[in-house]
Image 1 (cartoon, rainbow, N blue to C red):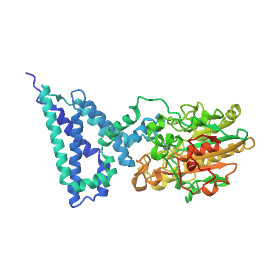
Image 2 (cartoon, rainbow, N blue to C red):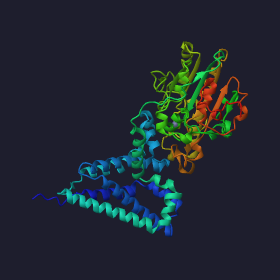
Image 3 (cartoon, helix red, strand yellow):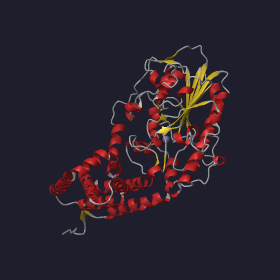
Image 4 (cartoon, rainbow, N blue to C red):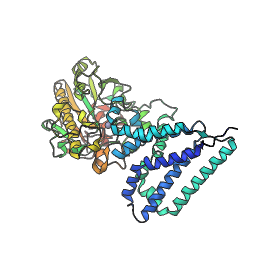
Length: 528
Ligand SMILES: [Zn+2]
C-alpha cells in the first residue's frame, strides 16, 4: 500500500503560507495601522483581530483557487511578487494599485535597474525564493477522491467566512472606522491588495472588444491662415515638483537661468495623476481629470491627433523618458534614450540631446506650423544623482545610492535639486533655441511636469500614491510658459490651473477652431 503519511494537504500548505504572508510581508500595513490606532489598551485586541482577519482572508482567497495544478504555482508567484512589493512598501511607503502595475509594466530595463539594490535582492531571496523553494519541495497529498477534497475545501471556506464575520460583527465599531475613515490602510496589505489590482488592471486594459480609436474634433481647422506660422515646443517634465523651483520661492537657487528669461511661471498648477503612465496620456487627452480613465485615454484621439487633422501642423515627439505612453503612436516619434540617436550621452543620454538636429527638422518640414514635444528624463527617481552631468552638482553632499532611506534628508534633496538645476538649464536652452526662429515664427514653449515627487516627507518617497491620498508634493507640479509675447497671461501666473488646460491651450496657440474647444480650460484665453 502506498503510504503518504509524511505528505501534507494543500490546505495546510495554504495555511502555513498565509501565516508567512501576515508575519513577514505586512510590516508596512501593521506599521501604518499602529500609527493610526496606538498599539495599547483595547487597540491591542483590535489590531490582533486584524491579523486574524487578514490571515483568514488570505487562506480563503487561496483556497478558492486551490487544485492539484494551481496551488503551488499561485503560492510561489504570490510569494515572489510580494517579496518585492513588501520591499517598496517598507522603504518607500508606496501602494501597489492598478496604476502602479501599469507604470511598472511600462517601465523599461534601465529604469528597472535604477531600482535594483542589495536590500531588494535580500528581500527577494529570503521572503521570495527561499519559501518558494520550500513550497516547491513540499510533497502534497491531494486526497484520493474528488468528493472528499471538495468537502474539505467547503469546510475551510465556510470556517474562514464564519471567523471573519464573527470578528467584523464583534468589533463593528472598529471595523467601520477601519474601512470607512481609514480606507488607505488596507492598501498596504500583502498580497491581497496587489492581487485585487492585478484583476482591476486586466479589467481596465484588456476587457474591451472595441479597440477602434474614437475620433474627436472632426471639424478642427486653422483659422486665419495668413497669420505668422507657429512653432511650439511642449516639454513634458518628469517628477519635478513645484516647491523645488526657486521661481516658486524655494530657498535654494534652482532656476538661475530661467529667472533671466521672460517667462510666465505657473505657481499653482496641478497634475492629472501621480505617475507617468497616468499623467502623460491624461494631459494630452480631451477629458478633464474628473472624467478621465485609462480606457478613455487609450481609445480616444488626443490633442496631437486633432492638431494633425488640420494638415497644416507638423508634429514630432522626441522621447528621453520611457515612451509616450500611447500618446504619440499616430504621429512622428523618435527615441532619444540611446546613443543611436542622442548625441549627448555620458552615464546616460541627456535631455539636451533632444535639441540636436531640430534645426534640420524645422528646415525640412513642408507644413506651415510645427509642434515639437520633448519628453524629459528630468527628475526620475530614486537615482536622482544620475540625472545630471557632473558640472551640475552644485548642491552637496549628494545621495549616491538608489536606497534613499540610507541617505540623509539633505543628501536626497541635494541630488534632487541638482537634477532640477539641469532641467533649468535644459529649458533655458530650449527657449534660446526658439529665439533663433522669432523672425519667421510665432514661437512658444510650454513646460509641465507629469507629476511631483515625495522626498521622504512623513516617510513617503517617490510618487504614484492614489490621487486622493497623495500628498501635495506628488501633485503640485512645476510649470512655465515662454513666448515672444507674454503680456496677455503674465497676470494669470498664480491662477489655479491643471493638466486639463493643455488640450485647449494648444488649440488656441495654433489658432484651431473646433466645437470641442472650451475657453474655460484655455490658459491663453483673453476673456476671463
Ligand atoms: Zn513620471
